[in-house]
Amino acid sequence: MSPAIRDLKESDMEQVNAICSTTWGGNDYIPEVLPYWIINQDYIVRGLFDDDLLLSICTLHIVPSTDIGYISGLRTRAEKQREGYGKVVTESLITTARENGVKHLLYLTINSNEASMGLAKNLGFSLIEQYGSFHLHSPFPSHPTPSPALIPIKTNPERLDEVVRTFPSLIPNDYIPFDFQFYKKTLNTLRRISERTDYYLVIDNDGQPGGLFYSSPLREDRGEQAISYVVYTINRAIFVDMMARIVDEVQSMGATRVTFIMGPNATKWVAELGYVDSEIGTWPGEFLERRLLLYELQLKEERS
Image 1 (spheres, rainbow, N blue to C red):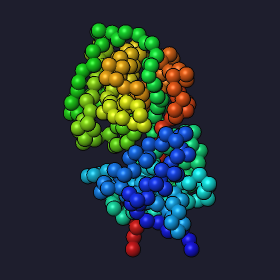
Image 2: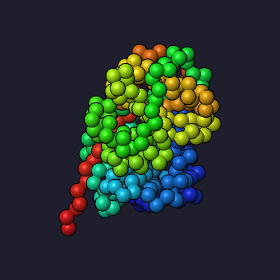
Image 3: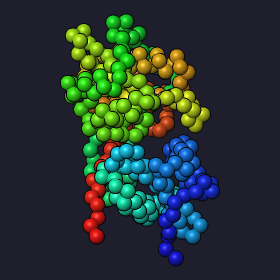
Image 4: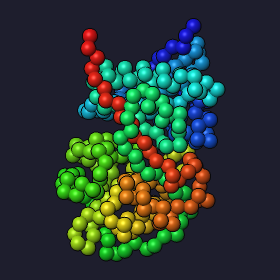
């Protein structure tokens, strides 16, 4: 009997936990979020089964009021990897995405996951964006005192959209991130993200925008108080100051882990900050060399 695909249920979580226990040293985020995805109508969570044995899982998130979908949470049982099961369950979700009107299907992975990158290429995805990403863990490293002359200005989505159009180098990417999801760079996207965060612009001495940052809500994640920040910059001095300010901010709110997702200039300059020390923490592994890779598959309606 060949393996069969079906939507996952909460009763499958024991097998999901077993599969994820070998990912990232047992620190996989999937067991925490999957129960929510299973009951959320915007997510379709699939599993590939051999009789009652769960071989592989994957999730499709269709972003409401858009033609964008996400493939995420692909996991395969350790002893069954590299046998094509992940491809099978992902292909079923690609078909479902097309049937639901998705035109832009996105897939996020990291540059150290060769199997995941290979799968994306094999399924026809194209690499469209790269972001730097690293973690800092408490106790946070020493850093300069933020300048009293460079005060971040809280900015609404309409003003930020105007700034980005006037200074396109501030956010040169077509997609912008929030809490490890990426969205097309539009005013509607900025408005949607602003429902969960505040945008802060830092202006240089000439009145030009030199940097932008915003954060996810602080949350408990695997025993840590975790938060993520997105950082863009076109001014190195402002970038150094912003990073010092953010480290002060996360310390004051009691965070024990901060994840940075960084635009191209920030990715390049962070290696020179001295804020990153591999002794601070080892999860999930490499810091400065890690890149978030965003792939896209453009879907067309199948003709009957």
